[in-house]
Length: 328
Length: 248
Image 1 (spheres, rainbow over the protein chains, first blue to last red):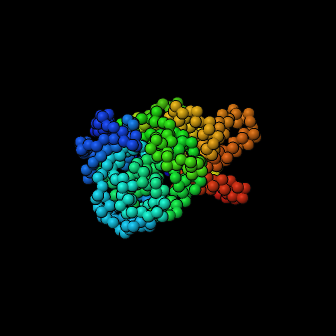
Image 2 (cartoon, one colour):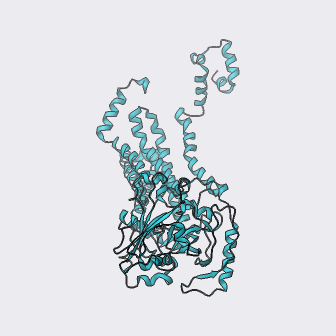
Image 3 (cartoon, rainbow over the protein chains, first blue to last red):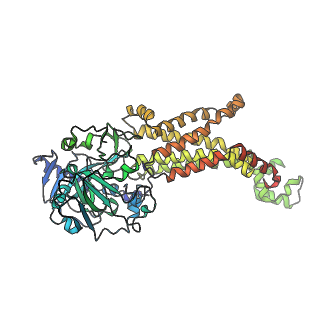
């Protein structure tokens, strides 16, 4: 695991933000009257956006639909979700991304669409996002290091976006690549991984309604350290599948090579579905330390890890007939 | 006069001296030396006088950990922070203990040996704190996981083994046990080399990809162990004895 955590958070910065709690209560109230979608998650269409908080930087986003899949679990504080990150392009300590990403330029941005699709080429971020309404998705995020958070992402359905490029029958997989800017990303100077960072999904996984491309979190634009301006969120997979600062999306016929899988094929599979029954060779995946809620808690943070991170009902059918020990 | 020296404050003694009462030769020594002599009455010697400071210094990381815990200043994942910091200090103190012998050979400062037991016991203390945090705070409520963890996870296996091996060393660290075990004491305490290797492996194997930090500890351990090879050890012993005594 990346072990050392030295981000120098001072106590005064760990402020309680009761507004998050309030907002979740609002969502829960709304959720009571909602009819569950096919996904089985609580959801609600609402324009009643929660009041913006002073403490969250970045542009506030206009959110159309909301989907809370947290099942009443406490949300992670914004401060924690943005100052405890694995984003090795900015350094391998948990505090490094927040400390070292200040010089990163997330604007202007463009994404190259390539491979087996009728529509390919380079598109500006505005072109990518324009036809889609932003949605809020409150998801559990399970890191392969056996800790987890509950984060309200803001983004667009990945499947809806991909369909716009009309992938052909040969498009069996979708490959993603992170931007490679050594001048703005100090971590790239050390080959801890094979840069640039690459990830991939099978096309049916990418088309699943729970998979999103996020542009924001906590109602605001993504901060640099969380993958601004565009990142993948696949809540039933380990966190490292959520590739950040995406500059290329390619439809491929064969399974793409992915960074962590190349770094340790025995430890990090292509699928990387959260699975308490398949341990990391070096540590257990049966339980996780949940980082969420208000205040400081030392005890009682450990909880059992659920198959597919609690999204089995929605996604297990994608893998029916597959030996999940072999295709981990 | 001896009693006077102890009881009388510095100034009155200086006054007595200026009156010319030089009954004993050392009374004419400079004031600094004289105060060192006064100290000797509380501590056996300078090393003994330094020990409480080293002791307090060794407790400082624990005090900071307690302070940060009390103030909720352990960051986003306080449990990981507690585990990492206690583990770091356990390893550092273990390496400091292993550094004593090479230090003596290289510098000829033989009295360094008198800090070794304290450093070793503090290393054991921090390993125990580290393990306790893992067991009580981190695994809390999931203790059934512990046995499989120890058996199945190499990094936990070696870390736990290192702690187990430290127990007999801590138990036999007293003067009485040293006397009782005689030559076997040295044989038993050679276990510390294996413990050093296990401790560094524990760190190396838990890291996901960036091995730079554990590699530093590995490097220090390698140097400390290499300096013990007969070839190096003999060479340094020679140079140490060859030095004129006043340079020691």
